[in-house]
Image 1 (tube, rainbow, N blue to C red):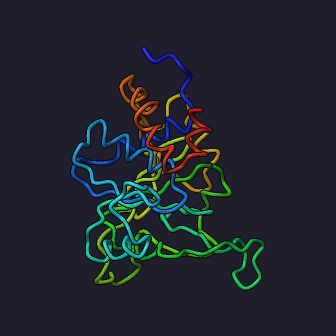
Image 2 (tube, one colour; image 1 turned 90 degrees about the vertical axis):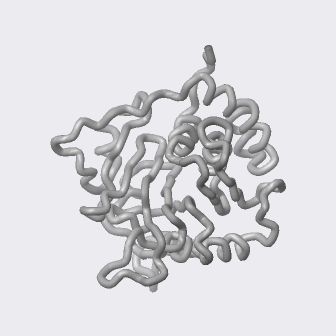
Image 3 (tube, rainbow, N blue to C red; image 1 turned 60 degrees about the vertical axis):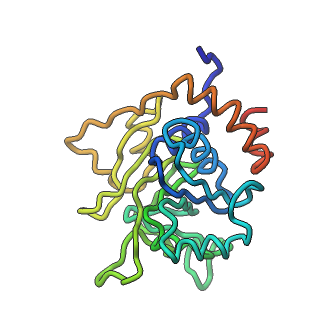
Length: 245
């Protein structure tokens, strides 16, 4: 038995891992240690045929940085990509540019880079956030850098959109019919009230029983704390040392 207390970030990594399917080409961009670890864990458990494209990995097939990743997405070669934002709204839009009025913001951020293109051209996008509160999950983002779907007439180049979102509290999914984010499951030990209270929009829970995600299995934790840890130390050294020592 693995007896060490499970860190909330390990819960997130396991949740991400379980969302990935064997055979998918899974890409992660900059500042994405949790998705990267989730991808590596999936490769070592249920997805031996997953093709990981982890930006910053010295062993990655990506040799020309983000330009090569963008090119793969434009050719329909990326099945899953991960995005985050300082704000995420109920429609799955993300904000990476500004808090407040764009012309005179309270906070100016680096911007969306290629997020809009990757959101549209990846087969599906999994959002993630290291924080889950009402400042992040808002009814409407202050600025839309990338959207889960096209308003009105669909763009001819759109291949996909949001499938799920993973946070330290829960897993959410995108309801394609309602075009809204809804709650799918709670992470172990998290109460429904905590998720609802820290989310700034309706999660579509009325009349539904929300399950708790099965806790990490011993094998998942063992791999996470050995093989995945050792690989992560080559990609995200500070994150790996913070989480696993």
